[in-house]
Amino acid sequence: MNFDADRFKREERIGYNLIAARYAESAVLRSSLNVALLDAADLRPGQAVLDLASGPGVLAREAARKAAGGLVVASDIAEQALAEGRRREPAGSLQFAAADAERLAFADGAFDRVLCGLGLMFFPDVPRALAEMRRVLKPDGLAVFSVWGEEARAPLVSCALQCIRRILPPPKAERLSPFRFGQPILLRQALEGAGFVGIELHLHALRCAFDSPQAYWQAFRDLAGGAAAGLSRLPEATVTRLAEEVARELAPCRQGTGYVVQSEVLIAVARV
Image 1 (cartoon, rainbow, N blue to C red):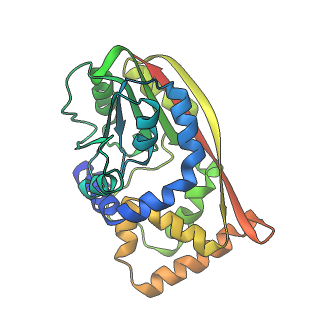
Image 2 (image 1 turned 120 degrees about the horizontal axis):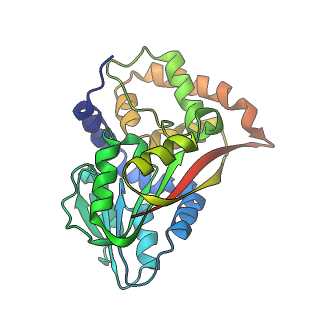
């Protein structure tokens, strides 16, 4: 199966536009990860910060508080996701810019920090995107990323994906794996290959609690981007069958009356 980068980006854009409001509400599940990423970024008042794959700007909004008095730009290919971010941030402390991470329309050396939370693995041309990040960073700038760990260590995503693979036919077009940088050596090699130095990698345990399998399944659909676009086109009976399969898959995560899913995330800090 050949990979079609343009088609993949279209599906991602459609998916994140579709779920923009729900994504902004459900992103609270990742609050601890956002805190860890921003701590690693060492943000300071007055800095210029670019948040890539920002969606409705959840991470960027927190960055703006830490870089008070500076410039924080939330950027994404999904214009409706950015519009949702503007709606939720009427005071104007954030700037929003629709942009492809592989073709950034910002001046060289414009930012002190570039952030990318759970987005790098969905860029088709990672070397080009990383080169663009280095270009727009100041000479002493930092790029900070979070990516999912290995599939077996990231059940928050893999539980639903395994059910989708079992129930649905193989996709007609190849998709990028959310776990493609799950091994630290692969992430380090990508960053070093792009010319970043002083790379630091940290593990973050993302713990999410759900009242029921249905709550987990809804959260997955609310945050799933391109997968959300595909799921929205399925017959209701198929969606119901998927939900039943997810309930069985999630059973090992039961704790008391609810479910706790802990997943490994890698956080990387890279210097220009």
